[in-house]
Amino acid sequence: MPINWKLRELLKERGGNSAAKIRKIVLEQTGYQLSTQAVCDLLKRQPKMIRLETIQALCDAFYIRLSEFLEVLPSAAQRAKKNTRTIETRRHTSSRESAQRALFPVTTPAKKKVDFAAFYPDARKFLSNSRRCKEPFKTGKVET
Image (cartoon, rainbow, N blue to C red; front, side):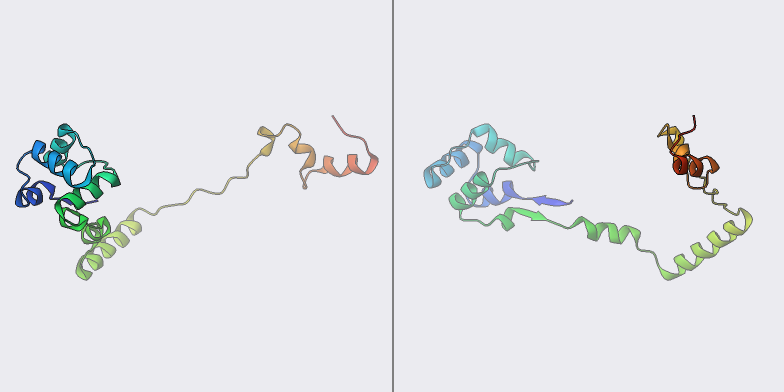
């Protein structure tokens, strides 16, 4: 997911030249305490996670909106561009694929009958097409 993190540039415009100064402004304006190292990390690179309280404190202290320093772009738009082909390419590809299918026919494997006896030891006693199944139920005796 493409994300544009522009906090450093925005805070520089608003008077936050150093991490210590930004930390001091946030503390004075909002009462929210940030470490200098945390502010430094936010300025250096886009964080993987950030608390909503921290975002709220930054927005309140510098009178900014979240959308001014964080922009999230949908990744679906990028995938659509990569997967989009022109009609001519599709025709060319489909004719090439059909030629390959004619040369190398793909056979689907035959459906195999599953022997449930491997899973259930007494399964063969209860098979509907088994001759042994019908007799024991009528007489009440079970073959072994």
